[in-house]
Amino acid sequence: MIAFFPSEAAMFGFSRLAPLHSGDSYVARVVRALGWQRLAVVTLVTILVSTRPLLEADVVGFFTSVEIAILWIELFAEMALIAAVLALGYTLLDEALPPRMPLRLVIVCAMLLGLSIVMTVLLYAHYADGFDHLPPPLRLVADSLRWGLPAIVLAVIADMHHRALQTDAAAHAVERSHEQLGRDETEQQLALLQAQIEPHFLFNVLGNVRRLYRTQPQAGASAIANLMCYLRAALPQLRSEHARLGDELELVRAYLGLFQVRMGARLSFSIQTDQALHGIEFPPMLLITLVENAIKHGLEPNGRGGEVLVRAKRTGQLLEVAVLDDGLGFASAASDGTGVGLANVRRQLAARYGSQARLALESRSPRGACATIVIPLRTLPDVGPGRLETASA
Image (cartoon, rainbow, N blue to C red; front, side, top):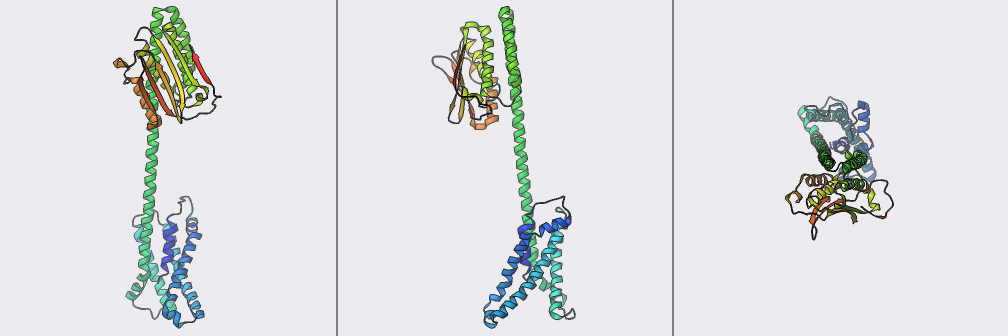
């Protein structure tokens, strides 16, 4: 009567949690579903359920210990047989039906009820020594419902549990898809921003060289030679997603060398950084954008030139790279930090590091400006030995 509970507990506990192997044969799936976990649960719960009726007061007081033991063995054998038949029937049908078959649960429940009726008929025939003295059909159905209904309820619970697992798996799949889409969008955004910076920077350099060639041919020829050296070093990194601080500093050095040809003594620069920081990851082309902004909006408009200082230092787990100049500062609207170049720098920092990075703009006293990029420390391979390097020109 109650032997169905252990088999259904096993179904609910293990059948739906087993991983799906769509390429396995039907026999292999059935054998895997009837693994030791399910059999252990069936055995354990059958023992507990078969022991409970023997603990009643009238049984203990009327029978001896030996008789109680014999009764328990007989009851356990009967319940174990019913539990095994129901568990096997459920497993065979559960593995045979397609997972998304319409009315799948109705078919499983109908099978459980039919199997419960068959087991009831066999029990009556066993105790009556044949099928001649079976009770009326209505009585058979009523007796079958004593374990048929719990079987159906537990089958419904197992199906709901299975659907919940499917929903959870689908939600995780959607979440992973959104994460991948977010990464793809970020990479596309970085590529777009970098593509915006590269033409902007290169066209400015070429325009300066062209103007210099018209006014000072000899200096223009020298500038072209320096530009060729610069491009030879810069082009491999223009499309790179990652760069080292040391690489970006070398590009800045070459870039400032180009402008020294044009501005002469009106431009001086220095680069101060710890050699140990040269292996730190740094976004490509952002530092040159800050240097270009300092010259274009700070030093060139004031007519007398000035000095550009590039300085990098470590503060805790952050890298701070600053570009300082003693030009006009933020006196003009073009240099107030809202230009295309600085906007691209901010968007690239946000796309790469989120809230962990920032671009800070400050005025210097008595004149000039300071632009600082702050990013998390991320070391790339092949970092050289640490030493303080100051390069001046």
